[in-house]
Amino acid sequence: MARRELNDDDWELICPHLPIGQYGPYPEHLRDQLEGIIWRFRTGSPWRDVPEVFGSWSTVYDRFAQWRDAGVFAAVMEAVIAEAARRGQADLSLVSVDSTTARAHHDAAGMVVDEEVLVALERAAEAEKGAHERCEKGRSQPRR
Image (cartoon, rainbow, N blue to C red):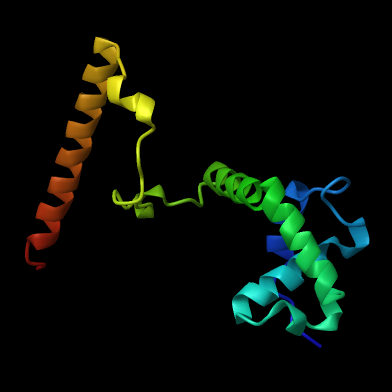
Protein backbone atom coordinates (compact mmCIF):
# COMPACT_ATOMS: atom_id res chain seq x y z
CA MET A 1 0.00 0.00 0.00
CA ALA A 2 1.30 3.46 -0.88
CA ARG A 3 1.94 5.85 1.96
CA ARG A 4 -0.19 8.94 2.30
CA GLU A 5 1.18 12.02 0.57
CA LEU A 6 -0.66 14.59 2.71
CA ASN A 7 -1.02 14.61 6.47
CA ASP A 8 -4.45 15.42 7.90
CA ASP A 9 -3.57 19.06 8.69
CA ASP A 10 -2.42 19.67 5.10
CA TRP A 11 -5.55 17.99 3.78
CA GLU A 12 -7.80 20.19 5.95
CA LEU A 13 -6.06 23.26 4.53
CA ILE A 14 -6.35 22.18 0.87
CA CYS A 15 -9.70 20.39 0.79
CA PRO A 16 -12.04 23.42 0.86
CA HIS A 17 -10.38 24.81 -2.26
CA LEU A 18 -10.80 21.72 -4.44
CA PRO A 19 -13.77 21.63 -6.80
CA ILE A 20 -16.56 19.12 -6.54
CA GLY A 21 -18.97 19.06 -9.43
CA GLN A 22 -17.99 20.16 -12.91
CA TYR A 23 -14.22 19.67 -12.35
CA GLY A 24 -14.30 17.42 -9.34
CA PRO A 25 -14.76 13.79 -8.44
CA TYR A 26 -17.21 12.28 -6.04
CA PRO A 27 -16.27 13.61 -2.58
CA GLU A 28 -15.24 10.17 -1.30
CA HIS A 29 -12.57 9.89 -4.04
CA LEU A 30 -11.28 13.46 -3.85
CA ARG A 31 -8.36 12.86 -1.49
CA ASP A 32 -7.26 9.62 -3.16
CA GLN A 33 -7.13 11.22 -6.60
CA LEU A 34 -5.25 14.29 -5.36
CA GLU A 35 -2.78 12.08 -3.51
CA GLY A 36 -2.33 10.00 -6.67
CA ILE A 37 -1.42 13.18 -8.57
CA ILE A 38 1.03 14.19 -5.85
CA TRP A 39 2.52 10.68 -5.77
CA ARG A 40 3.11 10.75 -9.52
CA PHE A 41 4.97 14.08 -9.43
CA ARG A 42 6.90 13.22 -6.25
CA THR A 43 8.22 10.01 -7.76
CA GLY A 44 8.54 11.11 -11.39
CA SER A 45 6.93 7.84 -12.43
CA PRO A 46 4.82 7.40 -15.55
CA TRP A 47 1.07 7.81 -15.04
CA ARG A 48 0.56 4.08 -15.62
CA ASP A 49 2.65 3.33 -12.50
CA VAL A 50 0.35 5.23 -10.11
CA PRO A 51 -0.61 2.66 -7.43
CA GLU A 52 -4.14 1.31 -7.60
CA VAL A 53 -4.78 2.54 -4.03
CA PHE A 54 -5.23 6.03 -5.52
CA GLY A 55 -7.70 4.77 -8.11
CA SER A 56 -7.24 3.85 -11.73
CA TRP A 57 -4.19 5.57 -13.20
CA SER A 58 -6.28 6.86 -16.10
CA THR A 59 -8.82 8.39 -13.72
CA VAL A 60 -6.05 10.06 -11.71
CA TYR A 61 -4.52 11.41 -14.93
CA ASP A 62 -7.90 12.62 -16.22
CA ARG A 63 -8.51 14.45 -12.92
CA PHE A 64 -5.07 16.06 -13.16
CA ALA A 65 -5.69 17.17 -16.77
CA GLN A 66 -9.13 18.62 -15.93
CA TRP A 67 -7.81 20.54 -12.93
CA ARG A 68 -4.73 21.73 -14.83
CA ASP A 69 -6.84 23.05 -17.70
CA ALA A 70 -9.35 24.68 -15.32
CA GLY A 71 -6.63 26.45 -13.29
CA VAL A 72 -7.45 24.59 -10.08
CA PHE A 73 -3.83 24.12 -9.01
CA ALA A 74 -3.03 27.83 -9.32
CA ALA A 75 -6.19 28.71 -7.36
CA VAL A 76 -5.32 26.22 -4.61
CA MET A 77 -1.78 27.59 -4.39
CA GLU A 78 -3.04 31.16 -4.06
CA ALA A 79 -5.58 30.15 -1.42
CA VAL A 80 -3.00 28.24 0.62
CA ILE A 81 -0.55 31.15 0.48
CA ALA A 82 -3.30 33.57 1.54
CA GLU A 83 -4.26 31.30 4.44
CA ALA A 84 -0.63 30.97 5.53
CA ALA A 85 -0.28 34.77 5.43
CA ARG A 86 -3.48 35.13 7.45
CA ARG A 87 -2.03 32.79 10.07
CA GLY A 88 1.27 34.65 10.06
CA GLN A 89 3.10 31.61 8.68
CA ALA A 90 4.22 33.09 5.35
CA ASP A 91 7.73 34.50 5.15
CA LEU A 92 7.51 36.70 2.07
CA SER A 93 11.13 37.79 2.51
CA LEU A 94 12.03 34.47 0.90
CA VAL A 95 10.12 35.28 -2.28
CA SER A 96 12.35 35.95 -5.27
CA VAL A 97 11.48 36.81 -8.85
CA ASP A 98 14.01 36.18 -11.59
CA SER A 99 13.91 39.23 -13.83
CA THR A 100 14.88 37.19 -16.86
CA THR A 101 11.46 35.52 -16.81
CA ALA A 102 9.23 38.22 -15.31
CA ARG A 103 8.18 40.52 -18.09
CA ALA A 104 5.95 43.57 -17.96
CA HIS A 105 2.85 43.74 -20.07
CA HIS A 106 3.41 45.70 -23.28
CA ASP A 107 0.99 48.37 -22.03
CA ALA A 108 3.27 49.03 -19.03
CA ALA A 109 5.72 50.95 -21.23
CA GLY A 110 3.51 54.05 -21.16
CA MET A 111 2.14 53.66 -17.64
CA VAL A 112 1.24 56.92 -15.92
CA VAL A 113 1.61 56.97 -12.13
CA ASP A 114 0.18 59.70 -9.94
CA GLU A 115 2.97 61.83 -8.42
CA GLU A 116 1.87 61.07 -4.84
CA VAL A 117 1.93 57.34 -5.49
CA LEU A 118 5.36 57.56 -7.09
CA VAL A 119 6.78 59.50 -4.13
CA ALA A 120 5.27 57.03 -1.65
CA LEU A 121 6.73 54.08 -3.56
CA GLU A 122 10.18 55.68 -3.70
CA ARG A 123 10.10 56.42 0.05
CA ALA A 124 9.07 52.84 0.82
CA ALA A 125 11.87 51.48 -1.38
CA GLU A 126 14.45 53.72 0.31
CA ALA A 127 13.21 52.75 3.78
CA GLU A 128 13.43 49.07 2.90
CA LYS A 129 16.89 49.53 1.42
CA GLY A 130 18.05 51.35 4.57
CA ALA A 131 16.63 48.64 6.82
CA HIS A 132 18.38 45.97 4.76
CA GLU A 133 21.70 47.85 4.92
CA ARG A 134 21.40 48.25 8.72
CA CYS A 135 20.68 44.55 9.04
CA GLU A 136 23.70 43.62 6.90
CA LYS A 137 25.91 46.08 8.79
CA GLY A 138 24.85 44.54 12.11
CA ARG A 139 25.74 41.06 10.86
CA SER A 140 29.27 42.11 9.92
CA GLN A 141 30.04 43.27 13.48
CA PRO A 142 32.05 40.69 15.46
CA ARG A 143 30.07 39.06 18.24
CA ARG A 144 31.31 39.50 21.79
